[in-house]
Image 1 (tube, helix red, strand yellow):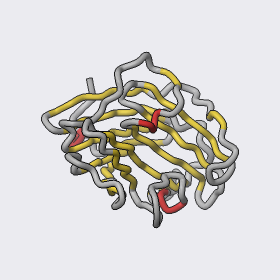
Image 2 (tube, rainbow, N blue to C red):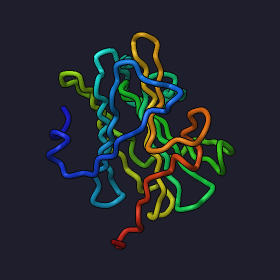
Image 3 (cartoon, rainbow, N blue to C red):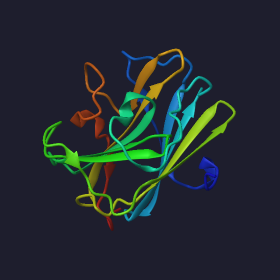
Image 4 (cartoon, rainbow, N blue to C red):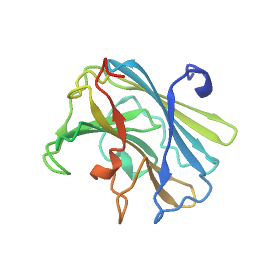
Length: 190
């Protein structure tokens, strides 16, 4: 069961934008709530509105898995401010997850070790679908970061849409530096 209603927790909510070349059919919004006192533990809640026809992967045993992005999947990218290296995390409603480190743009990919497996829960409420991810960020480099939040949304009619805080020109590309649109100041800074 999700911990509390999204509007009661006091996190910061970010609205993702649908890429103009991949319009959704019924999905009208994807929001992400970021709730953290520090970076040892962050609670991300992804909320999909218009989710009646959302493809939800079958529930699986929690654990690491590859290619989660091939269907409905929620993502977070992290890099130390203006660094070339970054970390990508994928969270599936199936309760599977992935974490990868990259040396530079789409280069040097390898598994990123997580001290604690992310905990993923999901719920439906009317036409909304929620995925809550409790994740330990203590292994991420630095605490002044640029973050990308994104989602791949698949609907039962075959429509796939790509949602992010910002998109680069051209095709959807969550790895592009334009997608690292959320600035997180160093801890202790206002």
